[in-house]
Image (tube, rainbow, N blue to C red; front, side):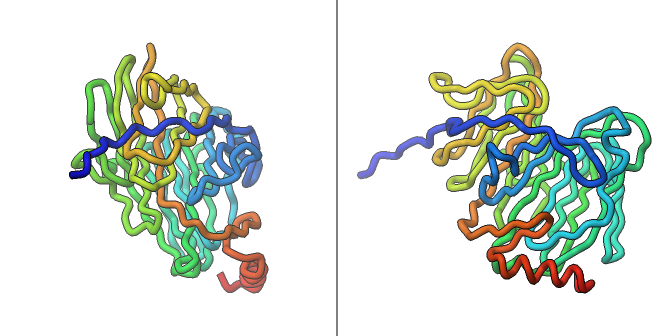
Length: 287
């Protein structure tokens, strides 16, 4: 009879800190994935945090620009952002809302601030599409704050579940090829929580307020605001332990695709030939 081996909690493989940059029409942001220290983490292509209460840092927004071959995920913590596209879609992202946009075969859209003062704060994550889905029809999942379920899975722990499942609570994002988990977790001082991570999925933790210890007590790594921990493979949970202050973080995981990646600006395909075709299609108005 084979012994049952209890799953181990994932450890931290490496820690990176985001790099300041700008994008769009001069929007200042911090690039965490997609920079020199962490180019990609399959299936994740980019992670940006934008945070400023100075309108000059964000007022230019992101005017019309194309995408093909991947998905963009915008999660707002504060502020208001209006999006529109060449398919006739329009919507407003407000604090606590999320938009999961599947660009597929091609879309041209804009993301513009709908405020002239105050704090603008949130994240944009780029998620790769498998080769078989890169030319699928574009679609949106616009999810208002009240549609994102919340749970208190342990004493002093609160979680918003955008995608994936914590306990009996499942997030509203559905039909995504990489079977993502996306949790926004708050821990009060001294709180501990073993957050679920699907076996075989790549995962990261990004701290956006406070500091946290990650992993089993004997090998825990500390993480402070602005740092991202890439988690080791193996295990189906990750132990999060708050220190003497509240901590807020996102935990994101997804199934790696293991496919070639060809990137050029807003186009992510599998070969350079497909990138050239994407440029031609965009220039000829076929998006």
